[in-house]
Image (tube, rainbow over all chains, first blue to last red; front, side, top):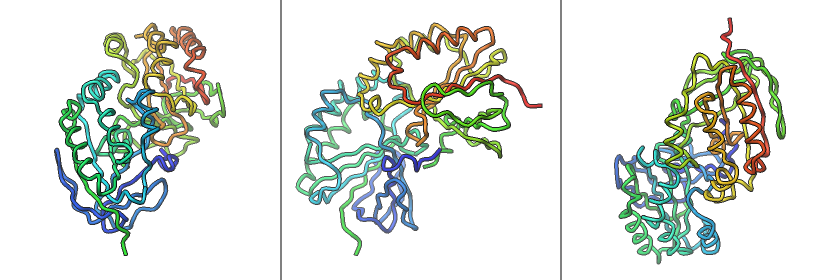
Length: 190
Length: 190
């Protein structure tokens, strides 16, 4: 196992006292919360982690699983990159799904994900205002199956709350058994 | 990253001088070969690896990706477990697929995998004679995307060759850019 071979596909979110994202709130939505932290450092590939930390959550950028070609084309056209200067707000929402979810077949999962829960269609509505990136943790032994990351400008805060509320009401979310909602503000530590 | 948290979902195939599988041949099918080894040890979870080794290939048992419910039911009914006493022959076939494969959507991959290449339907024909297990390596930074493992009794050797020949002629296999074929015989080291 050479996780360093993943290069920039690997990301670590390190909760502690350093990093450019200041923690506003860490709130459990389902299941156990994480210890509080003042800041989060985002480390990619073999970038070294801060020496002092409360916790580290890791994830891998993988191939797409549910998005179909027309959706993918729409996403490519509309999506925004991470790191835009105006996107000073962020959310890190780690999610774990139940064994029942993972025992479903791919098409059963796709059916719940999009046909019933409109996960992609709902997300597309908020592009390009809200930039997103999904990291996978399940197959590297992480406590969370997914780390979902969002970046947006302050004027889209209410839109983001609406997106989160919409997704949490879906059938897909009945398969979520642990979820933590971490809100952040970009602020270089001076 | 706590790969040890994967428990028995994590396997390492360690090529060297110890292990219960004696290497008969290591043959490159596409791309670079691996160094020769006399034996392969199969280590699960946190089992310790042999001290001396030529190479280690790791993989993770993940959720199913392409199999649909009726196929899954047929597989469950017909498949054989690993470790049957009569299954003294094995094959370890590490495979890497091209970037073009990974840039396809799930349904495009499924279409090539099953509709055009009949990967599942062909495999089912050989159950329960040939027991199989798939391990994923791509998202843990391994050189191979998949480690495919097969166990069978000597009388099914020709059937196994037929299965391998059939799969290598499929459209799916046009996306394979590295493949090594390792044949093994079970033999406790005395």
